[in-house]
Image 1 (tube, rainbow, N blue to C red):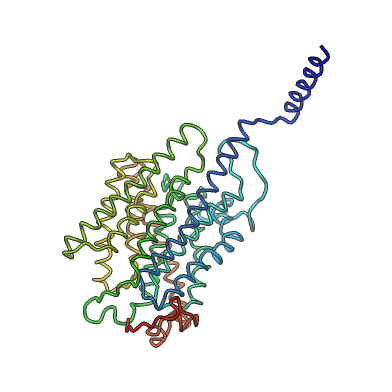
Image 2 (cartoon, helix red, strand yellow):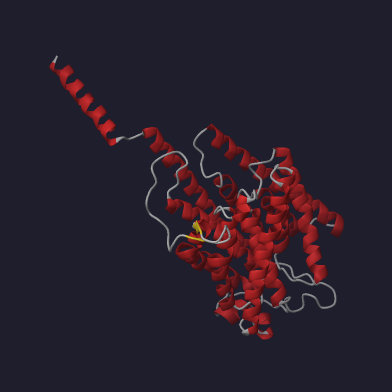
Length: 430
């Protein structure tokens, strides 16, 4: 009898304690799961920096490997710090100028929200968003490879992550004017990739081509390690499952879970279709299947589906990838015709395929035509114009491009005094 009384008393205390603490275990579990989901997605997107480093290094000369790896590292280090200090606040701050500019102070909050499904801690949200900022910045590294001074690249990296990317990002993801007119970009075909792609185009134009690239007719300068480049594309592909599914920002609940799975499958299908069609297109044009074209086709398919992966069917995702695969091959050939040297094809992959992704969001995703056309024009023009001005200023200051002698020696030695392949000797005029 006494045992029952004691047990009843303990149960009453426990129940009363939970009621007093007002703890909702369901809400707390949902909050924990959604935030952990975003944390894992952030780690996957951060790992994409390794993929970009491998792709860019593999598709360029061995003598520039250290320089490329260093640039990718600093995109994350310098860009991440600036995005912490001002970038995140510029992108997700209070509207101060009619939807064109926002700001919410320096740094980020550490105050946890009330526990609920979909409620994100600002610290994990920043971690996810900084990975996107680093992606936008590092795209340009490939476009300017082999001839840009390291110090100028650091200035550019700070400029795009601290100012250019956050401002245009605010226009859409911060609730700015593009968002207000109905423009849609789920995970960043334009907000992230087109910004990097068109910034890279500006850099390639102002810098000019590598020595020997266009002596008479375009001369191919093959990458030194296609194994590394292919591995990098696989790493990027895996990282994209953080990029696109993670942009759902929640996984708790049947609707969110279903959306995440649809997004993941659409992402896969577009990449596969882009790779196959780029291979076939290049095979027809050049009479042999070209691995680098197929690799870029995969990436173009991923970029093209990023804006609309939550809004289209599986079949439409394949069509988007098919078109992206064609665009990237013809885009690379167009740059040759225009004598613009983009060593890794970053502009066709991220710039042209990014614009295609924005338009496909209207064609297949059902989002407003006018808003998608406006957004698909304004964001690339913003990125190109601002970075063109920056690169032109650096050129006028005489610090943009290395000397011809240093370029032929390789940036690893001339800029850093170290080698990626110590003990090997390379003979090259490229």
